Image (cartoon, rainbow, N blue to C red; front, side, top):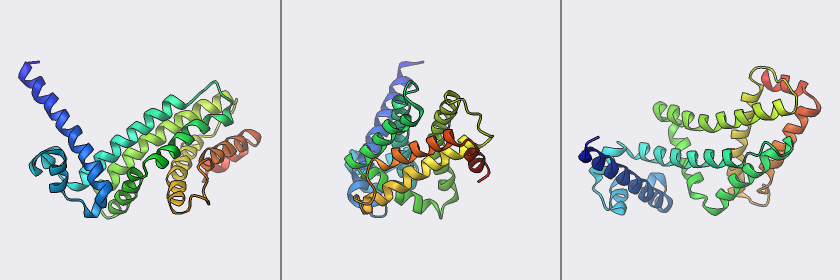
Length: 214
């Protein structure tokens, strides 16, 4: 590759990273509705045209920011999944980390909620958001495949996929409730519920038939 092409590509990647970091700060301060591309560009030290060139719109910028955050979460979940642990213990570390990130910095999750609401009126954004969350669900489905195999279970088609969808729903719903009332939703509840579901499937395999047919 010619040196000039490489340099332009590297500069473009650095610009994109700087814009995402600036957007995270601006959206955290102003929320999605209050933030402007002018403010994001100024925060990053670029022109508004640079933001349009990389992302095209404020909505795309927020979606890209959430996708970056979600990919980090997926990577962490993969690292924390311990197949040598007892099956019911396996969700605990990943669930704890998910809730720990919420405690450390709730702004990315709050922005996700704003993005979700906005995407209900924008089909293209809704589809892209579904794809992003689908990557997390697919990771959890692979965990479920490995766990049921280790437990000697043969789940019906679709059961592990539905289990993954339930876990994504819990991973979104419980943090929403916890941000409103931390005492009502302990941080450990997410992992505990996942463990209960695993134990239920192992003690009564027919429960997976119910899940598959839900």
